[in-house]
Image (tube, rainbow, N blue to C red; front, side, top):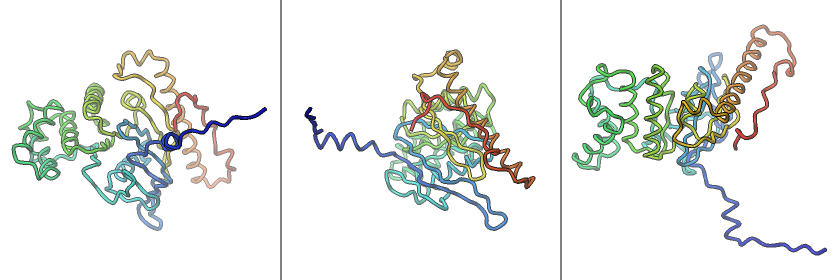
Length: 311
């Protein structure tokens, strides 16, 4: 029997063989602080590709290096090993292309809402006229719903309003990548849910690439396209990547009764519980100096449903 081989056109073959390049990537990134006996190994061999226009959530534990993670991506910290690339070029330092929203607001207390936002606009868009900058500032004040409070200073604002100012200040720089370092962790439950909705609404309008650090699995599922687990430190590394195959916009009340949401929540939570248990057992073994073979230190990580896992 003869075999007929059909050749794919060269142009098509190249197109199919070359997936879109990531906008931002981490390749073998490791980070330590201190030296000698005070040396702390925070992150180890981090490999991650962030796609243009996606919303990626990184879920991890306290002390696992989540803030260091975002500072590395923003350029505020440099890796000890590996490299961070944006558009294929090494990240050498901070840039308006990567805007970082901190957990603690980081507002200047002597400036008003308008003044704090103007600080970043005047620096990034210095070539615009004064009237154009003013219009730009007012747009982002309205975008986060603070038109009525534009004249107030941080001490006159609630926690949620301060975080809105911080978000508006970063968004006003028009970054290509928005980095959110646990921006909602200090807020009460109702304000946190409201801010999640606002962040998603802004993301839908602006369509910036967004990475959010969080320790809340439900929050990650509500906002993200993909979720990646950051394993406990020291030497924290990335765990599996989970796909969030849920239509937008997402309604929390409906999600609570959605079987896919429940299954994804269980898969992520069970992985985090298992990896934390393994980390604690390793720490206990080191503290007691008891010789324990590796198999005894490795509780079975739960089998994760393949429909939730992505590359």
